[in-house]
Every structure is written in C-alpha cells, then in structure tokens.
Image 1 (tube, helix red, strand yellow):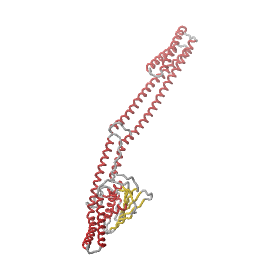
Image 2 (spheres, helix red, strand yellow; image 1 turned 45 degrees about the vertical axis):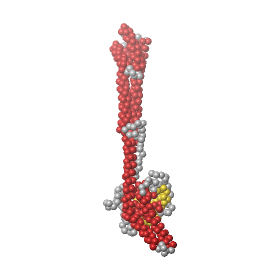
Image 3 (cartoon, helix red, strand yellow; image 1 turned 90 degrees about the vertical axis):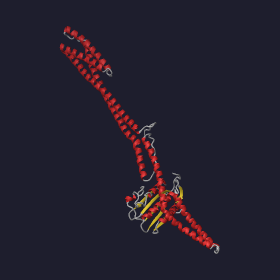
Image 4 (tube, helix red, strand yellow; image 1 turned 90 degrees about the horizontal axis):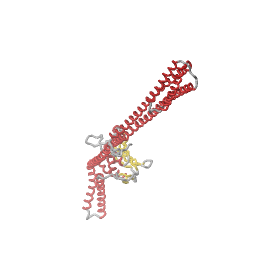
Length: 479
C-alpha cells in the first residue's frame, strides 16, 4: 500500500493515481506519434528512392541503346533522365537533411555528376563525328552507371531496413506500453482495495461483530486520509457502545436483583425465624436449662446466621459493579451460588441438578460467570411449563484444553428460526413487559470475553441445551 509522508485526502490520492495513468497514456501517445511521423517521412523518402531507382534504370537503358544504335534520340533521352535523377537526389537530400542516408545521397549525387560530365564529353565527340569511340571514357561511363544502380539499390534497401527497424521499435514500444497500462490497471484496483475496500471490509466485519454483541475495536490503517479518520471514529463509536452496553448490563443486573428480591426475602425469612426461635428458647430456659442445651441453641443461631450471611453476600457480590478480571475460580462454587440466588424463582415442580467435578478450576470472572448461569437458569425455568428438570453438568474436552458446560432444560424447545436469533440483543419471545431480550445477549458477550464459545441445541418438544466451552488455561489479565 502506498503511504504518503504527509496527510493527503482520499480524493487527492485518487486524482494522483488517475493523473499518473493519464500521463502514461499521453506519453505513450506522444512517443507513438513521433515514431509514426518518422515512419511517414521514411515512406516519402523510400517512395522517392524507388522513383530515383527507376530513373537510374532508365538512364542505363538509354545509355545502352545509345551505345548499341548510336542514335541522338537515345542520347537526348539519357540526358533528360539524367537531369531528372540529379534533381531527385537534390530533392531527397534537402527533404532528408536529418536522415541517416545522407552519405548515400551525397555519394549518389557525386556519381551522377561524374556520369553527367562523362556523358557530356562523349556527346560532344559524337556530334562532331557521329561515331562513338570506344575507350577509357566509355568504360568510365559504364562504371559510373553500374555504381549509380548499386547506390540507388542500396539507398532503397537502406530506407526499407530503416522503416522495418522503426516499425519493430514501435511494435516493442506498444507492447511495453500495453504491459505498463495493464500493470497500472492492476495496481490501481489493488491500491483502491488497500485504501478503500480493505477499510470498508474491516468496518463491515466489525459491524457484524457488533450485531452479535461483540464490541471489538478495529486496527486503524495508517492511510493518512478519510478512511483512517473513519476507522478512528468507528473505534470511538465502539468504545461508546461498549460503555453503553456496560450500563445496560448493570441495568439488567439491577432488574434481576429486583426480580430476585422477593425470593431472597423468603430465603432470609427461614434462617431469621430459626435464629429468632433459638434465641427465644435460649432466653426462656437460660436459668433452668443445662449448658449443653444452651450451647446447642447458640450453635443453631450461628449456623442460621452464616446461612443468612451467605445469601446476603451472594446478592451483594452479584450486584457489585467491578472491572472484568480473570482468576482461577472453582466452577462448582460459582454454579452453586447462582442456583442459591435463583432458587426462590424455581418452582417446586422443577428439579435443578448440578453434576460438576468438585476440583474443576477455570480462569473466570466469578461475578460475570455467576450472571451467565443465573440468566440460563431463569430462562430454563420460564421455558418449562409444569414438572420438569434443569440439568447442569461439565466435562473436560478430550484434548484437555477446554471445559464444556451443559445447561439442559426439559422445556418445549424452540424452532430453528428462533434458535438462530436467541443471542441477538433485544430479541425475546416473551410477552411485552416480561423481558428485555438482553439476558442471552449479555451471556454471549460474557462468554466471548472469556475467550469461549456458547451454542444452543434445541428442537420443538425436545427441550433446549446451552453448551458453553471455556479454555482451561488463559493469560490472567484485565481486559
């Protein structure tokens, strides 16, 4: 991903990328036009070269006719074509001043001029005697003529090879520029993916997590543009949502405390009655009874006081707000405390059984895990109509890395459509005013904080089972 050493907006980045692409296309266009112009000039030159070659051949043809038939018509035609040939060379030399064939032009022009001088000398002698005298002069004319043909052929071949070279170079440039354009066409989407699509994908996945109740901040990409600002703003929003969720959790907890208060008052009433009765008996029989009987009454008072104190401490522990902290806790103790708190809400027709190994210790936040079991037990009670059972059990996974906790009720069960939404915030199947729909969502969030998983298995008429998987070992840290 391109990182700029200074802050630059996403729009400016896109403009820079598009500008580079357009600049590359314009450069390819300019270079190609330059080469095409050169090819056009070469085509003009080679056309002249072919014309000159034809003129040279005509000069040689009339030269041979003159030597064979010694006619003035052949001589005059030779002079006429010779004049045209010199004019063509001069024209080519003037139009192709920057071309590589300049040495050939000059050499051909010199040969034509020598040939013209020799022919002029020969024609003067011919007009005096009307007889061609064979000798050194005629040999020179034939030599110059042969040289002219060779030079004109060489000029045509040279210009033809030049055109082939330019066309080959132009073809290579087109291939290179096409590859560059293709590369840019690949790079631009990649850059867009890193600068725009990747942050959007991160936000998309994060919003899905939020919908599941997982408030995780995203990693902020150092793009120095609006997308970085969006990610930072998103993290701010996640922090605020997490704070609001904590407030909702506390409100839900207070609501649960209100629901449990009547039952807890009933639970406290029994030990308080026993304390009161034991105290009255001890007072009335203090002077007449034997010391052992008084000690037994005091022992009863102590036991019932401890019982009441345990109930109150459990409620206070559940109600107290504190930071999330993982410590090694005994799983059975946490479940038993939750069962004790909710016992008054469990009808007599529902049996609650706990089968958890006594020495099973896990890294947990005791308060929040107690809330998990409290929510699950209350939900299980509300799902059972009439006699039934709630079975809580735990086992260690075969690999020894996790503990799997099962909370099963013998209720009516739920359909797949409802099962898939059970952990959604504010989703509830209860009548209006009977529930907020936050209990299972909060439970899901607590299990996630423990690096665990919670799933549900249920079907109509077969009851419901919540399976909680918690790691046996994890880093003891505050989140």
